[in-house]
Image (tube, rainbow, N blue to C red):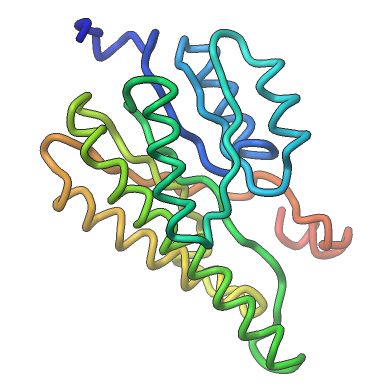
Length: 209
């Protein structure tokens, strides 16, 4: 294996989940521009993923997987390693984010929101990190979990989302111990980056303030 400087990302390989749009697409683009070979994961956004891959400099490929499926999550890691021959970075960016009031509304919608948030935002990153750990240990790689201020702030209509991100924050600390020293694990918690389409002007102004 070629010796790669820790300050030179050229030739390294990153898997970015939920990379077809929004924050994930920006992460994938920044990595590609730094010389990283990028595995662009998507679930349903096939067209957006393909368009992003076509725009990225260097080598990139789109991978499709339903992260609510444990088998598909593990297979995703295997497919990326088979494609690239190594893995240096796992970025757990994909997230389920929808507005569901804690009180009121249909029980079925509430239950589904909680199930989806825990599966995609917490269990999937754990499964992916577990599956990727052997490959990351070889390259002394890193797991980057994209957190959210919702892990520490109370958003009543996003209790399911906040709880899942709080769990991911705790998982990040645990993985740093469980996978270290060969694999690092870090968390990044952005503030307000973009708006959900369902938010109106008044609520957007409130969030900005």
